[in-house]
Image (cartoon, rainbow, N blue to C red):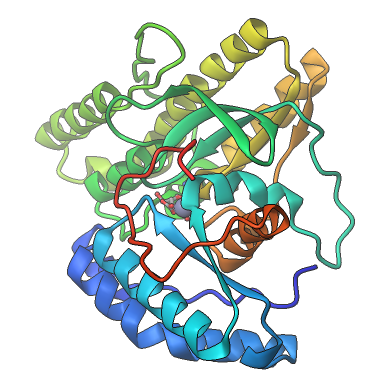
Length: 318
Ligand code: KG4
Ligand code: ZN
């Protein structure tokens, strides 16, 4: 049962329109101890009450991973508890199993999970908390990147996803037409969509210097529509291929209102059962890492002090 989930944001990236790896690792270093301290206080426990400490081994930015890994090792060593290495992408999926004060249905196995974050877009078959099969993934940009780049092109701050979502709610999704990629299998591609968006804005600006501002809501709504359609198309194909109709959303982009609405709409039309985590467990958070750690704890799957972070870490890698 979740006792505390404290999240520190990193505003230092806003002015640059994306995450600067060096600044991210330094911010991790500054914030880690106060954040863990706050979580311990909120939970009403001390380090001596810990049975294990779970940390993100990867995938991600190596500098930030190193900060977390080093800290987790030190904490485990100092408090005499176990150490558990977690795959960040597995944790996004396992966030569905977090138990807190609110009653929520948890997906039965097997289920399909659409994981959409700033770094990843994956369609996964989940057979149990330890068995993940990637059915499709992005061959270029992630869905979150497509949202963030949309915002950047429109001069909006990073991370742009939530802002694009906000403006999209005021706009017309049919105002502009952006292409849905046609690539084989269940993989995704967002780079063509991004280029098409860039050209639309550049061409518009040639005729009207205030084009991006004047059409902001319609541009956001149309782009969001294209991203959501791209994701839903693949999801539908995966349902047909696997016959699985339990669908889960995970990752930062699952906070997107357009994606949530469309999934709920199609689920009721097609008789799927869908599982959408609360906002707090969609974007990166500690509770999901603890949840993944819990499953590894049950299996006695502990890491040694020699464990190293992995910038690239396949979903099925333990
Ligand atoms: O999972 P996450 O917190 O971090 C990664 O592991 O990448 O995902 C962050 C991504 C960012 O690209 C952010 O713009 C996007 O999730 N995001 C959204 C929304 N909220 C966050 N994208 C679209 N609509 C939103 N409401
Ligand atoms: Zn994430």
